[in-house]
Length: 154
Length: 120
Image (cartoon, rainbow over the protein chains, first blue to last red):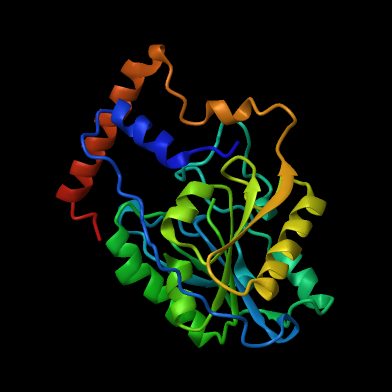
């Protein structure tokens, strides 16, 4: 049985007295970019919702790209909505598997790890994601000659 | 939505996630679904074998998918007992006052942020 997060979220916020339900993104058409080169030649990056700079206030946090050379030992995850009763985020690799990708690059399964990873905030506003955060992430990936992005929302 | 934008700009993507209905509703191009609690989409904490298998499956999905959307379900489970699935955002009768208070605090915080210019 898969958890129905859309229904649960709706009921949860209604119980908190919110009058308007959150409108989740809904699309019938789905874009598709086949791999342009073999994985063994592809530059791969990670996109995460875990926070690298918690000092930036949440309401103004925007998409930003950071070097894989200076990944925090522990990302800030407490503000995100995940199952804090059942699990924890003390193992970074359970949501940001950089070391595994480095191993896959070392064994030749992927071409290389990109220069930078990308933070995309969990945004209430879909227009902020569509008009600001997604384009910023696209531009950064194009600058880094990324072929493949693995997105791992918490 | 970020995955969609990347695909539209020539970058192949795969999302590793545990919120099946949300990813499906959004029209996510490729999804490797792990039936795990939100927080550890790649695998159980400190289970490097499970995490590594997830990554390899996600990469395999990238090479094998011939159209979008393509969703793949990983075989992993959090526990034999699915009890954990009941707890997330569960609403019990005795929680109503607490939830209402959380909502009031949330609305006040949003209002304060807006008044202080903290919005995008």
